[in-house]
Image (tube, rainbow, N blue to C red):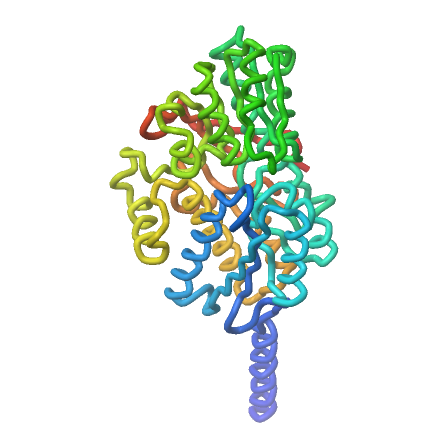
Length: 407
């Protein structure tokens, strides 16, 4: 009897060990193994949107720090970032290279609305995660039709609705002129203004679109001023944004000025336009500004500066794009940590859609990241801010801008 019991006990131990081993066995898709996780990215290191290039450099710096600290669950990050010059055809070429030659696990934070739109169907057909897209277009939050694509920041339309709400409250009799980029991003932003104004959309007295490749937007600004508007909304890329601010000042036009946050960086835009010319400009923020004395002794800001001092020595400490890259990289690392040893593309998306009150360092207090299988809009809060000639100051508190397009 004792012998039989011992045999059964031994068998049970062996079965338990076997089952435990099977459960613990790592799972991988292309781009991941016991030692490495390959992450793909495209960024406009050249071309008309090159002001955004520092985002990719900041992300590379953060991943270098993570690798020096031992990596993610013992695996090092290999960050492969190619220049697409903000050209959709080039983005497709580089994305195919990332997926088919470099065999990356996922594509992360590729920048631009037209560029990401060019590869969205391809990546979804290949079932390759297109994670935390570097654009605020609403189309990145459509899990029903594009389950492998997820954005990160508040949508362009939600930011525009916040502008419209502020205008209705503070300039109820205002006359609005709008400069917008002629692409999906600009159309998204423009529609957000109209939606936010609702029955008061007739406040818009002039609207001018421009092409991203145009050398200057000066003539558009002249036309907008001629409309008699006393409110200017610029929904533009960094180069055009700086030109517009400067031209408005040259014309002696003094409208209440609103600038989309993607092109409101002090370093990349306002300095180019002239800080005096930008005084009074209103935008939105979701991150702490390292140049704001409010945060001078903040532990998160100090840690960010320490990272810059070590891994991104040539970076501009006042460039909000560097902070944006730092935050996006943290979100991806959180997703990979949640994946554990299941580094399949399916599990990457499962974990990306399973973020609950996650707060990466440098997000403004009160803003957290939340996702679910039916909610692919991670950040849906923002803060209105106003430039005082030296730095941005908050207007009111953090506001909810949940998109009405949630699935």
